[in-house]
Amino acid sequence: MAIDFFISRCMIQNITAIHFGLCDPGEGQKAYPTPADEDTWIATVDNKSGAALNFIAVDNCIEIRRPDGNMDNRCDAILTNDRHIVFVELKDQDKDWINHAVDDQLQTTIDHFKANHTLDSYAKRDAYACNRRHPYFKHSLMERMTEFKNKNDVRLHIDAHIVIK
Image (cartoon, rainbow, N blue to C red; front, side, top):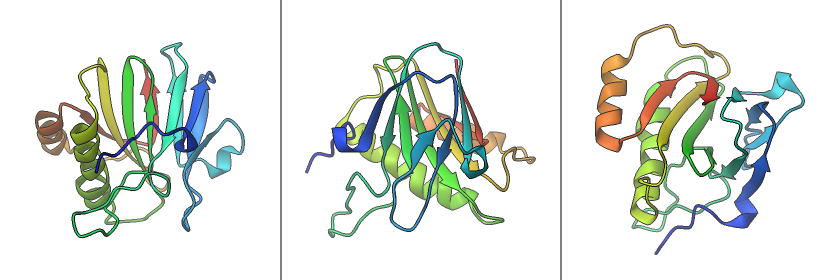
């Protein structure tokens, strides 16, 4: 069964703010963008591209199922416009979060996206694992990021500051 990542009930279109935050209220609710309430932000978005963005809530909005019918892992959101696509996982954890965010949630979402849509039309393709408790991850994960890029043709960032140029 095809998965449509661009269904209107999961999208907020034409976000023109150049600085806003991404929030995940948890407990079965979908992530959302907001220019207000900075203390609730898990990630900060700086849209330096000048082009309006679309926000797609993935987790708790788009059904992505395994062959056995159970819900599969999903990232929280996708930011997109004609030039950019950014897969985003939002976390608020102290430790042991990177593997699940990258290998399960981001990777699974990208795999399903690629099976149902094309990435070729986007000049910039990024994935962000964001954590409010570790907004700027201090350790180098260059090898892991390179492997991710080679596998997906998507650049991986472990950072809670999303910059779209």
